[in-house]
Image: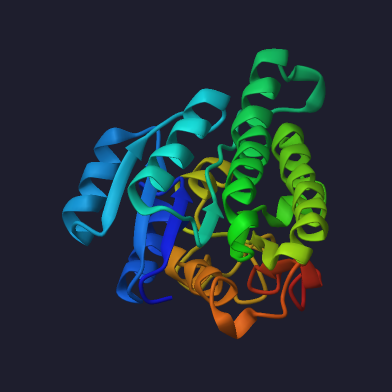
Length: 252
């Protein structure tokens, strides 16, 4: 990854920030995109000049054009794109969900991915190389009560990923999706405000490992998918979920 140029959306905190930290440690330069300018500046203060903050609403087409164009103007290329920005939205039954809330979740979680994939692939195709990783969720592989918009959005990005992998393959572009399970981020805090006790008992919905992941544990897998070690990996979904999708924990 040395000397690579990476774009990360949702880079101001959580998994995106952890991935930026890993990429920079491995020698890459990161353009970190987020709507939260304060979190971007705090991340830059920690990671240094190879973290280049870019404030943008990734769900809108002009800002998406802008962060890609600014990256290409400054660096001439995009080697890696980690499309990670996302929101949970209200936790409500489907019949109580407003159209405005549904549209917002779909815009941030799905439209932003389509925008990022399409713009980044246009830059990568002439160079005949590139890696794109999309953050979905375990909610992108199963249903979740009260999270209809979120699960719809995370299912949708899997379709974008598979299509992009098919179209990008002839140009040496690899595209994959990760499906994090419970992770210590703002989204998890909003989805599951009740915390496990110290032993992790009583939380059958957590995972087989009875704990949430640290963002860096998810970022480590993103780093792998972005590296040459994953050179034959494309068009695939990768749960990083502590065994959550395997089934209920033993004894529950």
